[in-house]
Length: 203
Image 1: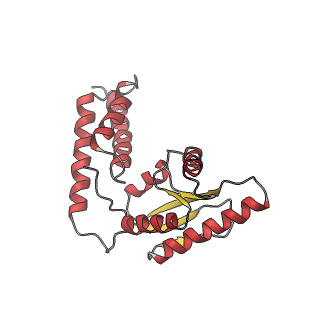
Image 2: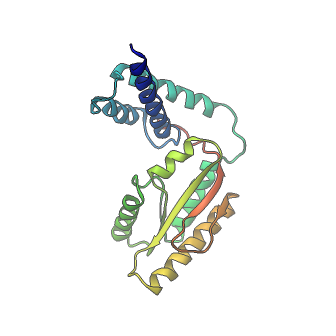
């Protein structure tokens, strides 16, 4: 292996490890699903020198590493993931659609929430975080961004509903002892600061 090849391989492996950890640690994706996603990443990237066998080895290593982390005592009880889950349940109890790990992007999350509103008659507001937000939870002390919105026509009515939804969400998060920050601007997301996420891995 030449020096250039070794450098390229190391860069690919570092990227692969970061992507695998971002899928595993938040606790929303099963081992089989992580393996499927990461192996496809290797198989469909002609420039990736990593083998499928190495990819599977890395995924299983990080899965075991995360489980070992979760087996150790956490910094506080209830854990932050339990607090966030409880807050989302409290938000939903108010008739607001509340979706964790909804889609992968903001647009996907909004579409998913609007579909739930249409199917259930809930709303007209919704609260969410999406897959990219969840990936940040792989690291202790993360900031979890919370999106929200209103399923009403744009204008003053939309702003009024969005403000009510955001304030209800902030109150629910703070009630759970989470550091929820929002500046009152409806085009800014809520921030849950210094989150230590310990959601159990899927069986």
